[in-house]
Image (cartoon, rainbow, N blue to C red; front, side):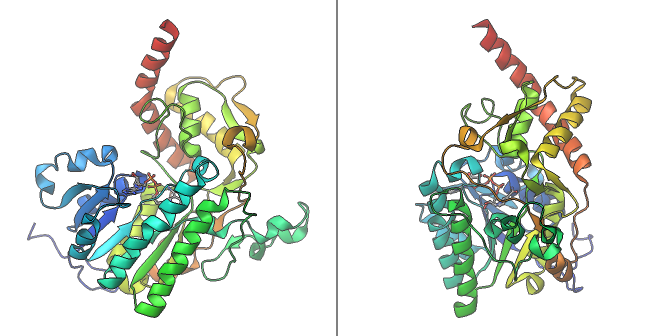
Amino acid sequence: PAAAAARLDLDGNPIAPLTICMIGAGGFIGSHLCEKLMAETNHVVYAVDVYCDKIRHLVDPAPPHLQGRISFHRLNIKNDSRLEGLIKMADLTINLAAICTPADYNTRPLDTIYSNFIDALPVVKYCSENNKRLIHFSTCEVYGKTIGSFLPTDHPLRKEAEFYVLKEDESPCIFGPIVKQRWSYACAKQLIERLIFAEGAENGLEFTIVRPFNWIGPRMDFIPGVDGPSEGVPRVLACFSNNLLRREPLKLVDGGQSQRTFVYIKDAIEAVHLMIENPARANGQIFNVGNPNNEVTVRQLAEMMTEVYANVSGEPPLDEPMIDVSSKQFYGEGYDDSDKRIPDMTIINKQLGWNPKTPLKDLLETTLTYQHKTYKEAIKRQMSQASAS
Ligand code: NAD
């Protein structure tokens, strides 16, 4: 509305409306970013994806108050000549498209490398050639393993921050051998980061690289057999949710000893929103986006989710809520893992003043309430059909 005061960026300048080409807009992060931009800004979004289930409420059809603000373009960026036109018409491109589920890295390494490197190449090229800004989604996996992980388990240096805290401009990228195909994803993401960085250095591309550290919340991935393939293996949040909804023990891979920091999707989206609207502060930067205060082992995550889900659903936990499986059984040959992921927050804090807010307990409550409401009835129906037949 004309009466609304103009919104200002972090330097006090009015924010001009942007046209944004968002590739992978139909995914977990894209759906939350579309909602945020529609609710709080007047930017225009071209939402590009091969499917739109998670943004159907915004695009199919767009509700009257969003007419002209958001449009869905169903296309596969692997092979569609419309991509260049959309990037040319936009001021900013945000690329979220990727294969990014660990179960695929070692079992579909070719698809993983093509998706994360080859398919991203034309996006970078069109942005560079047309002088368009690019926000590209990489991953915290580019750091690989911590330096400390190579020391004996009881070595005192393992407790020193410089042996594990991950810094954008300082930490090395440490991957396992080629036979450990798990690293195909991290390596493809690293190479596209290097290419984007080089386009910036040699051709003046205005870019921002985002390294998400385990963003989680509603609409992440799928529940196997309900809104995704029954044999599919989603990321850990959806795997554990699926077990809880079906009253099965949670499967802990290799004892669940890996340590992760989880950040609430809505906190993380605030960071992306700041990058979009503060190009002078975000261009040329690589940003860690995570919550260093929310660190748990995967085993602790399983314990917390079990407890929170019991409260949310009113169903008591199983007598044996968890079982151990080997990574070879669960993920197959070639699996490997990073030990620990604590993001350094200095750069994003200095450039954008961003800090994560939501404690792990609270974000699990919100998320598991959503999972229970969204899936419980469908799973009950499915399980009773299966037992009847
Ligand atoms: P997601 O799988 O939910 O979303 C990716 C979307 O891209 C999907 O909707 C998919 O259909 C679309 N897509 C893939 N290939 C495409 C193609 N060829 N053409 C058109 N659309 C295509 O994943 P997400 O969690 O939203 O992740 C988005 C990005 O963030 C990815 O690049 C991922 O690597 C990165 N990332 C996310 C996390 C996280 O914590 N969620 C962590 C690290 C990195």
